[in-house]
Amino acid sequence: ALSEHPNQLGTKRRNGRIMGRRDFACESASIYSTSQSDGEGVCRGISAGELCIISEESVAPYERPALSKGYLLPEAPARLPSFHTCVGSREERLTPKWYKEHGIELVLGTRVKSADLKRKTLFTATGETISYKILIIATGARALKLEEFGVSGSDAENVCYLRDITDANKLVSAMQSCVGGNAVVIGGGYVGMECAASLVMNKIDVTMVFPEEHCMPRLFTPEIANYYEDYYEAKGVKFIKGTALTSFDVNADGKVTGVNLRDGARIPADMVVVGIGIRPNTSLFEGQLSLEKGGIKVNGQMQTSHGSVYAVGDVAAFPVKLFGETRRLEHVDSARRSARHAVASIMEPEKTGDFDYLPFFYSRVFTLSWQFYGDNAGEVVPFGDYSGKSFGAYWVNNGHLVGSFLEGGTKEEYEALAKATRLNPSIENLAELERQGLNFVLEI
Ligand code: NAD
Ligand code: ISD
Image 1: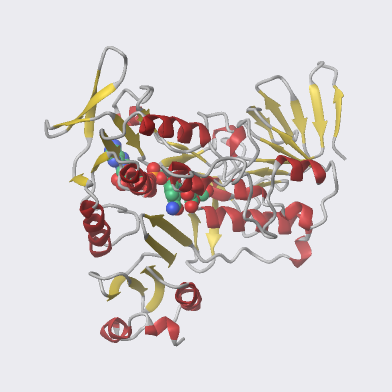
Image 2 (image 1 turned 60 degrees about the vertical axis):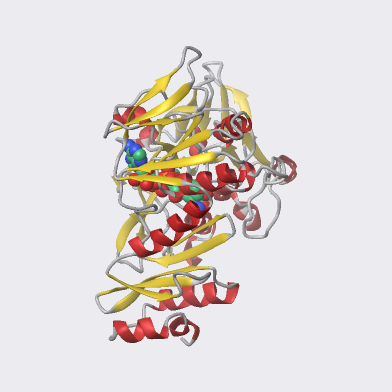
């Protein structure tokens, strides 16, 4: 059972099973994937006092995907406590009250500054020593800063990142003082695209700047990207592609007033949103655990190179059975499922096989909504009407369907897409697959 008593050093010592989250990473302020504590331990019979969650943030776990979507809406935006919850295994709202009622201790506002995995001990910035029997690392990732690309100015009042609720609050306040003004969005990935849509909805003129040829370069084909870029342009968004910013113009109040680009162009800016990728929070454990793909390497049980330590979510690099290789996936679905699997492995090891995950990504912007399953490797086979409301693409690698994308699908269509992609069917004729389009997965 978890107990608290002063140790010889006079610091507080907690004993018990500790479930850590990304929040206790010692790098910059970071956000956890809250789904990583989705009540699974309780459902699997953990007793009161056996589990504690340590978080650098001062609020209980919350649903992060809302931060780039509902949280930024101009009308009736999502606010805590309404998404103080994890849409977890049993759909319960994991409010602070829920944790209390279930005997889970939330150690909030507490930064872990070092870890000694041999001694199964964590040391916090406030001088506490916390020991554990089993540790789950869910430290997630931090936003990459412009300074890492040689550009200074991230601290300006009107330069916003988006990783946690503090970032989201800064962004909301910048938007509120910028209605009718200009925003420059740096980066054309998830944060860039979702924030640009929210800025437009908040009546702010948006210019997006990124170095690649098209938006969402990690996933979209040029044809898919073209559809979303056209849609955004129709909403007034301007795209400046294939370049990067070199510096900000800053006024006497320390506010950014313009963005200077590599080609010498200057874009006026009343605010800036930066979404240029993330880096996993591994530094607490470097030298103590095996790392891979920039994250903490785990086996199919989500177990690290240290038997009593597990890792889940954005920080974990795990074997994706379907691809036969280790990947680190940055997405809430992978966070939720890997967390559930880690808990199953801990609580019922004899009944738990290796994690068998079908990678899944999604986004919702304006009235659009897409889903992607599998891997975007190999040849692309587009289908559907790219000038209409529903279209998609398949990826075929080594003669098998490995990935699928669909915009504007129904629940049944998305389910069929996932099912077919997982089956990994052999594809002999790409032209025939294109002709069949969505029917191919609906008929499988
Ligand atoms: P990202 O990796 O999706 O996109 C990064 C973008 O920044 C790319 O367009 C890249 O080219 C661009 N970029 C990189 N360096 C740049 C530079 N110096 N100047 C300008 N552009 C540069 O990362 P993100 O958009 O920052 O998102 C962060 C994380 O949040 C990701 O893990 C993402 O999966 C997650 N997220 C996911 C969702 C979702 O799944 N719907 C929504 C929001 C955030
Ligand atoms: O869906 C999402 C989203 O909005 C995020 O921020 O997944 C990511 C996280 O990286 C998942 O942990």
